[in-house]
Length: 76
Image (cartoon, rainbow, N blue to C red; front, side):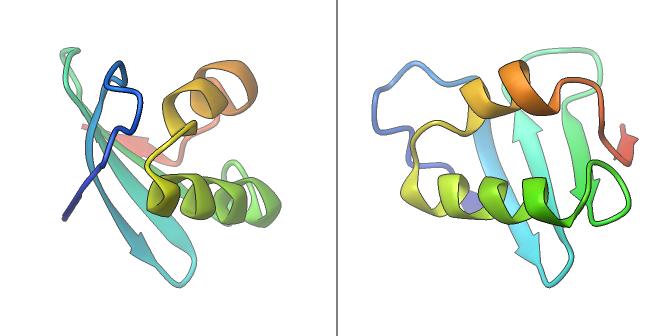
């Protein structure tokens, strides 16, 4: 897992891991803090945007809450 840089200092994301067809995001809070997003759900285009935002360390939490919402593949 790679620590999320959290450029603005107000993100709920702690870390992430990118694979060829997915991104695994770990949040600071919540009963289930691990979320997997892949090409099946929410889809390739969205996952690719998420990968870029994760590497930039800015905007990923907002993108998930405003665009991706509950379209994840798995949570635990």
